[in-house]
Image 1 (cartoon, rainbow, N blue to C red):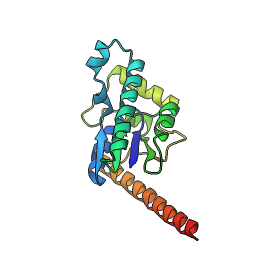
Image 2: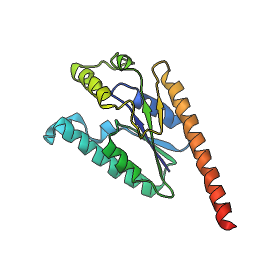
Image 3: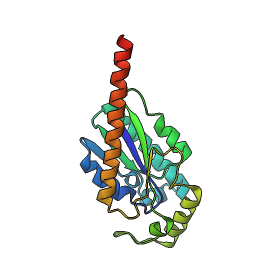
Image 4: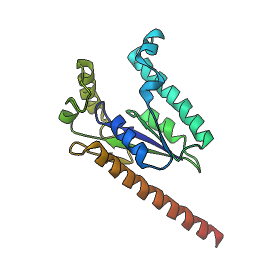
Length: 185
């Protein structure tokens, strides 16, 4: 199973691209992280914004663990801005049957600050986007692939990601076959 995180700052196109990508990959599913803890539930629980992020991440980790054990899907996709800590959490899901991959969408800051699609940014989101660029969410060193999707339609970005995944999977299959042949000798 491939666990695929689509990373990037707010308004980079993570969810839009993920929803297209899930239809391009065989036997894939998408987890909407924002649905794991609604703003209303967060408020009812008395959680701060940061505590809400941690709670969503914890709920996501539990859901990923369940899906990993069930082996129901070939690919599980979620869209979430990744930190060093969450990268290590999700990398720990890897085993002989499971791979974690992080792909980062990185349009330029000015593009991210535009109202893209149906989304209308509020003042807090604009401030957070600037902060995310300062913190390097668009350029994580641990990203397996970084895409400047500024001049692409979401479907084009999803197709590029699909191609990247297919190349990685093919390479790993070839490596595995080579290793088995070598060990058999």
